[in-house]
Every structure is written in C-alpha cells, then in structure tokens.
Image (cartoon, rainbow, N blue to C red; front, side, top):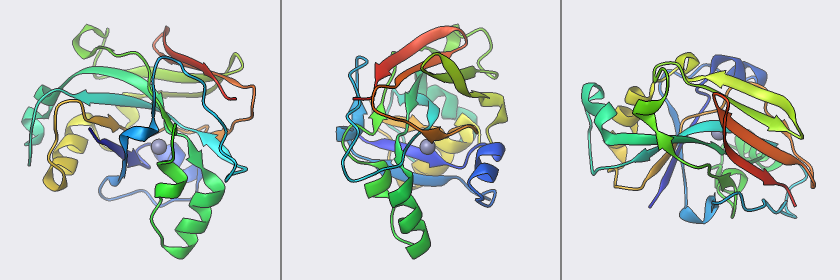
Length: 203
Ligand code: ZN
C-alpha cells in the first residue's frame, strides 16, 4: 500500500506559503508507516520544532489502474475521509531552498493520521464536500472540494500515468489555507460537513 499526496491544490494555500500556482499537480509519496489509525495520538518528533497541520480529503483506491482516463477516474474510489498531512515546516523549508526531496519533512512515522471512511456517494453533494479542522475546539482550516485546483478525477488521471494504483492505496488531495503549528497537548478534530471523522491528540 502506498500513499500519494498532492501539494498546493488550493489557491489560497499556495499563496499563504508564497508558492506559485502549479500547472500540473505537485505529487509526493509517503510510506504506510505514516498512517495513524483509530484516533491514535500523534507523537511530536524531536527532529522538528515546527510541525504544521494540513487537513485534507483522502480517497481510498478500490481497484487496480494505470493511465486512467479522467472520465472513468470516479470508478476508482468509493470511500473518502479526512486526514492530516503533518509537515515539518522547518525541514521542508531547508529542502525547498536546496531543491531537495521532501520525504523527511512529510513522510516520517505517524505523519498521516487518517479518519474513518464514509461512502462518497452518500455525501449530500459529492461535487461540494465541505471539510474542516478544529484545534482545541476552534476551527482553523475549512475548505471545500469544489475549490481544488485539480479535481479528484484530474488527480487520479495524472498520478496513474506514473504510478499504477492498487486497491487500498490512499490519495491525500491537498490542504486549504489556514495551516499552522501544533503543540503537545493539542486536540485535533477533522470533519466532513458536520460529521467528525478524526479526533486525536498531539503527545
Ligand atoms: Zn499536504
């Protein structure tokens, strides 16, 4: 199982980090050791002093595919949730400056807490999925899938040109604006609509 993640997929977030708006999806991979399930706590790693939260809609791939046509991409997932793409912003900054890969900033153990999946087709409006993150009861990020620069179908079509998709693969589809640091003791609660799908502590 692999995790594919998309960077800079919301205009306001690209702007807040002073990144250019991408002409094609920004893609990176994470290993399965990033996943934190069942609201397990996230342990703040000692190699960073600037871990940021990024709430994202996550798709679960349900069939094998390669070079998928965007018209058929919706057939490749049936469940979605929210997850957090924790980012060691201090390490990422150095990597960006030097033009180095992002794995140490993005793909460390436990960096991808994952919520409980819900049926995509059962969402009230699958073209408009509102989602949000609260830190200690205060909403810090809220977005809507309609504001993505690259849609779910475009993402699946693009990434499957390079990486064969397999059952159980996950796609983190990018974060809206409002990213910021977390601290030990924080409680993070992620929702789609008003449904809580992930709720865990930073330890
Ligand atoms: Zn992200």
